[in-house]
Amino acid sequence: MTISRTKGLHEADKLAGHLLVIDDDDSFRDALCELLRDDGFEVDTASHATAAVQQLKTKKFDVVLSDLIMPGNGHFVVEYVRSHQPDTPVIVISSHESSSQALASRGWRSVACLSKPVRFAEVQQALEQAIHHSTGHSS
Image (cartoon, rainbow, N blue to C red; front, side):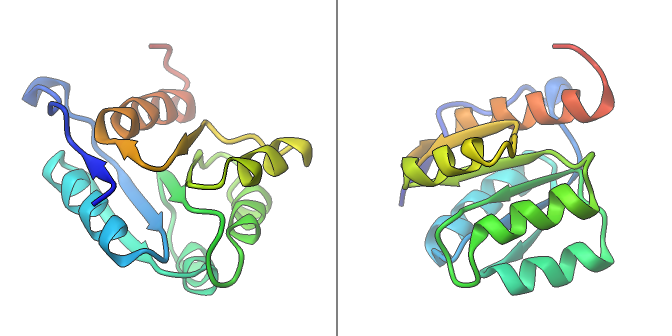
């Protein structure tokens, strides 16, 4: 498993929201989603870009967490979100740093680019930042 919890948020500090987690690594995706659900998030999943875009066409998510290197190309998912749901924050979680750099070179901004293996505390921090960013609150 490449994700671990260091400590959970205090009950009063728990965030809430509807997330889309996109990753072709089943064990990583399942572990991340379990931790996110334990923290109070509603979580939908996709294992490839095509399935993710289908969900994005029918649902509004508060935050999208996506790998970049996967079937169907994660860059396409980020581009789709930026074009069709521009207010939706994207958190990139990838083991390929060059992929995150490629996003930046195209001018695509994500709230955070996290490198695998990732600690759950990093995901929590990125989500807090994303949710505050999308609601216009400062941390």
